[in-house]
Image (tube, rainbow, N blue to C red):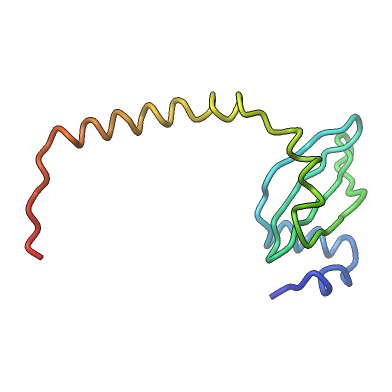
Amino acid sequence: MMTLTRFESLLSDQQAAYTWQHGEYLMSRLTDDFVINLYNVEDFYVEVTSDTGLHYIHRVASFKTATALDTVYLDTISLHDLVTDLLPVMQDVREKAAYNRSYPVQDRPW
């Protein structure tokens, strides 16, 4: 298991490679010149900052807790977009639930 201390001892390109291989992508945010991708790696978080045009990695930053990231990423989350994206899924769930309720539950032998 990779620890934060061990991760931070790696070279920047090794950190990025480990993040891409073992990290779980969470979200991105854009600045004027950079795209910043956030990953969950083991029990810590990693931001990989790259140039939007050249795809050159400028920075790899790691954090033990998400508290340091809350204000930066919470501003990028839109509840309206989240609800809009979930509405079709929820409608499908409602329709399947209604369809399944129209059939009697089978007796189980146990």
